[in-house]
Amino acid sequence: MNGATWHEAQSAPADLSGPDGWRDLAERFGTPTYVYDGDWLAGNLHALRAALHPALEVFFSLKSNPNRAVYDVLRSAGARAEVSSLAELRTVLDAGTDPADVVFLGPGKSAAEIEACVRAGLYAVVCESLPELALIDDAAARLGVRQRVLLRINPAYSVAGSRLTMGGKPRQFGIDEAAVPPAGALIRSYRHAVAAGVQVYMGTRILDHEVIVKNTAYVLRLAEHVAESTGIALDAVDIGGGLGVAYFDGEHDLDLDALAAGINPLVEDFARRHPGTRLLMESGRYLTAPGGTYLMRVRYIKESMGDRFAVADGGTHHHMAAVGIGSFVKRNFPVELLSRPVPPDAEAGPWTVAGPLCTPNDTVAKAVRLPDLAVGDLLGVRRSGAYGPSASPAYFLSHGYPAEVLVRRGTAYLVRRRDTVDDLLSRQATHPDLTAPALH
Picture 1 (tube, rainbow, N blue to C red):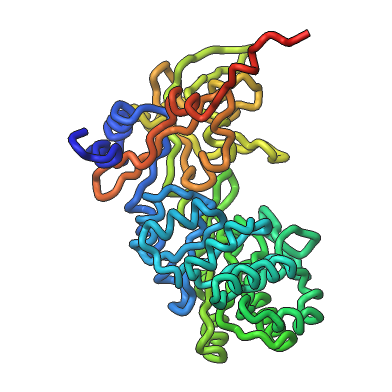
Picture 2: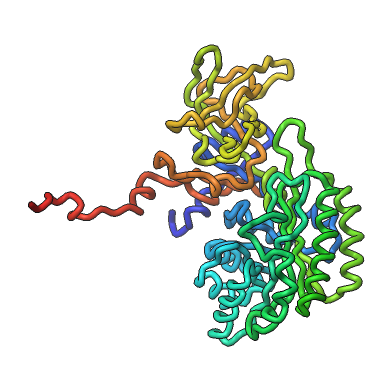
């Protein structure tokens, strides 16, 4: 490649507005492939930041999409970083992120993770238990520094309207709200782990702006109560987030204007009374999901007992969320035919879009209405920019990870090459003793 890195060598003009562009992407980068619209990612974050009160800082949750190029786009648009692993931490620091704009959270941090946070001088480690607070203090003492800590509170209040409740009941996350005030003396006793704020995450994928406003009001009141009852400072309050994205029929995207109208006065009042306190909002799915498409190619068309099947090269191993594993009711992500124009009056019928895996669960969409399909057609699973390959069993049947492509300002960049057979096998090892004859 004449000295160029593999990603620098893999770029090409791209147009996501019509079939020609999608065919070009598939021809150049292959399928299955995740395609991210970088212009949309940046524009969406700009819109969120413009709508919200300027005191509210947006921290991108890398767990939703840890691809470095996706983060680069969001960072350039003003996002801070919320990370939960050494790899995510390395990603944001290698990207040049100021450690003062990084928080680290997670219920089971390792000693290595805690030490890495302290060494890097992150703005805050979100502490999920009192024993963890002691470990943070030990690490900071060994390094001769003081580390700011935000106490994650498991609230007594349980959120309604969340697709995944993160608090308000027995959870591995955080310290129970009722347990915090009695622990005030212990919390203040640590000299190197400095508790100076709180984090509360009520739930995720919330589509009702009124629920988010109600949650925010609760968190801000709770933060003041914790500070008053324990004597800790309020350097920062992390209100969580949970901003939802509509995937399924009958759902509607979050009303950003209505959210801003409800949440901004709360932030304004709190900021006026606590002018030195940073206010953090975490967002992952909302920032990335609608900006991604899972692109796959139809390999076979068949009929079984009256049902039509399109068997594609993508499936459960790359997009577990769309497949619906773990859901009580299987509902389809938006699926479109991308490789050829579809006349407005084209008749659409029910199709089951299946993947290549040896399991009946490997169905990307069931009874989805699509025009007549043919071998070679390109299908796109929309709203796939969050919790795609990173939350899927990519090594099932030894397929490996798909390619990932990001399109920015009319150019497509390969931002993750797909796993090859050599990649997969190179991580394995055998030993002569395993096949040696048994001694009798």
